[in-house]
Structures are given as C-alpha cells and as structure tokens.
Amino acid sequence: MRFCFLTTSVGFLFYASVVSAADKTVHDQQNGFSLTFPEEWINEPLSEEEIRLSVKFADLICMVSASFYDQSAPGSPSDTGKFMEGWSMNNWEKTIGTSFSTADFSNDSLARFPDGYPVRLADVDFTVLSGNATFYGHSRFAFSVRGARYGYVNCGVMGESAEQVARMWAPLADKAERVVNSFILDTP
Image (tube, rainbow, N blue to C red; front, top):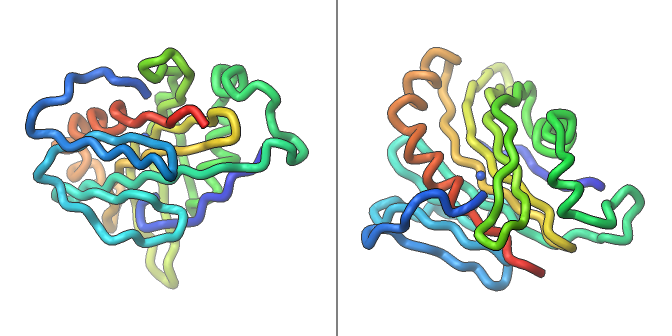
C-alpha cells in the first residue's frame, strides 16, 4: 500500500485527555477526521493540497492530512485494522519518512480511538534540505488506515540546529501530545 506524503514545512490515537471548555474541536465530515486543540491556537492557511487543517501555537504547528485511497491497488491490506496493529518502524520509514531528507523514528506505540480501532503513534527527528540550507525538526505523529481512508496528525517544530529544536520542543511537548491524542479518523 502506498500513501502520498508531500514534504511540508512540518508535515498525530485516542482520547486520553479530557476536553476542556477552552478547547475547540473541528470535525471535518468531508475529509473524515476530528481534532481538538486549545481555542487560542491560530488556524493557519493551508500550505499543501493534502493538508486539511493546520493550527499553530508559538513555534508548534499541527497539521492534519486525511484522504481516501484505492483499496483495490496492489499491496493494499485486506484488513486495515490488523495492518495497523502489525505496523513497524519500517512502515513509518516507508510512508512518512520519505517526506524528509532524513528521518529517525522512535517511541512507536499502538493506541486506540475511542471505539477501539487501532492508531499508531511515534516521534520523529528529521532534516529537510532546501537549497544550501538544512532545517532540523522534531514531530509527534498519529497515523491510521481505516477501511478506504487514511489520515494523520503531525505536531512539530523546526529550527536551524538539532539543539535549537530540542530547546523549542521541551516546553511544547505536552501541548503536542494532547493535540495528537485528540485525533480521530472517522469510519468511512
């Protein structure tokens, strides 16, 4: 199965946290996902056709991509739930990693949407080359394939060095985790 992921500036499953009154939930029925984030976050203009929602807080940007794919294509799994449960680091590298110049995935784990359907979580340290410049980044991802639909949320930061990215990420990691854990991919 192949998924199309274009390189973006920066581009995350189950409800683990309680939604507070100051949170906003976007349920995009056309593209089949929900995401909850603090109300004060800024809705960003969409940078790529595949990006369905982009929100920002300080240096942290969270983007959602969700779409349908051809289940009859060669290599497509017949049981997408089992496919997600058997997901490996190699799957991260083949589907998400190709969007970056380098990508080092860690903390892969299986989580569940509220209805029990599987979703994968992981962190990635990455680089993106742009002309003569190298940009460094760190992101927290949630990714799932559900029937003929796939989607992910990617919350991350980018900077000019790995050290700068680590300093930027530290105070934002909990916020990113909360938003990533709110992602839900609808049943097609």
